[in-house]
Image 1: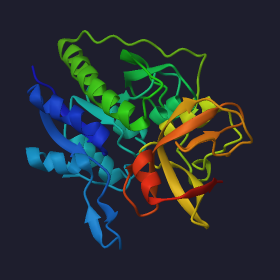
Image 2: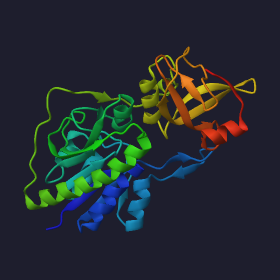
Image 3: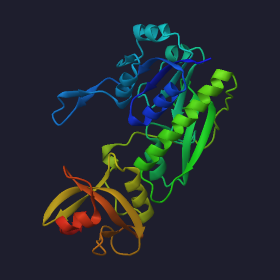
Image 4: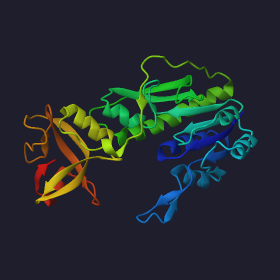
Length: 308
């Protein structure tokens, strides 16, 4: 028998799961997402989240509370009489009254192999840390931060060329597939739960602006991982001296290379830059306010005199 589902999500990552669950014939009784936010250069427009836009295309009721901590919102949520709430990158903490409201509780799709990388930025942190694999999990939510028992999991290798954007897209589709399987098992009464391991806990804290600058003193593999882990957003960056002027430049793709010199030394005409140990070649760049360019395109329009 199809389940009555409240779907809770906000960014692009969540959209495939909403589409797949709707396609399975379950009744999406409501969609919860973050409120529209200021957008555009002047911030004068209010932009709906990707989940909000997709929910409206399906004709699902949409709720955009600023918080779920007040009693009125909790009563509204409970009145929907849902069997389960599916939560994927929603962006608000769910108080206990919300967790307890659906008949079977709330299930979260999380883009890591828990208990590694609990928290806000698991995709970026896995690449930045040099992990060789990650994955996605469906867990039953409880009051702690990503601490609940795991229902299903699937792994994926992190290759040496993979950016956070690449991994995001892969895990978004994997999460949708895994969540459909989990909801199907829940519907049949056969969804098992396994407590998370007590060892190996790490936290994927939100990416702060202050940590996005490239530190050329780091080893080349760490610099490369830093660049790929922050691509395409928010983007790792450095300053370059272009025709005598310091300019902020995002580096969106790199690869390990060879060479030895003082950190930040330009080693050749292909934008190979020395690191604390080894070197990286810069492959994709973007000046502030400009378009993303390959290194060849960038060098045709800019004379790079120094990297800072």
